[in-house]
Image (cartoon, rainbow, N blue to C red; front, side, top):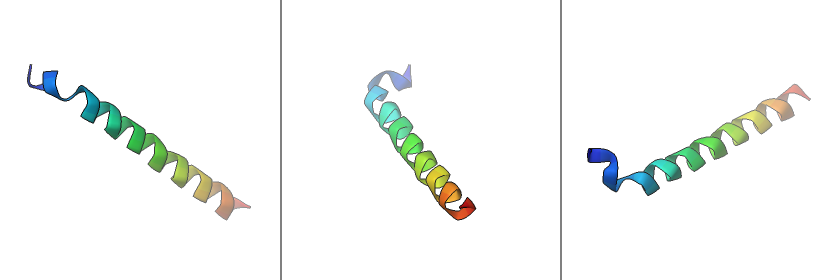
Amino acid sequence: MSNAGQPQRSTGNKIVRFALVGLVNTGIDLSAF
């Protein structure tokens, strides 16, 4: 139950991961063009 105090942190990590993935995907798309 140690995760009870980290819901916001986990969601923040998810947002950061999605942002990084989006930047990487856009970079790959730009390099592809």
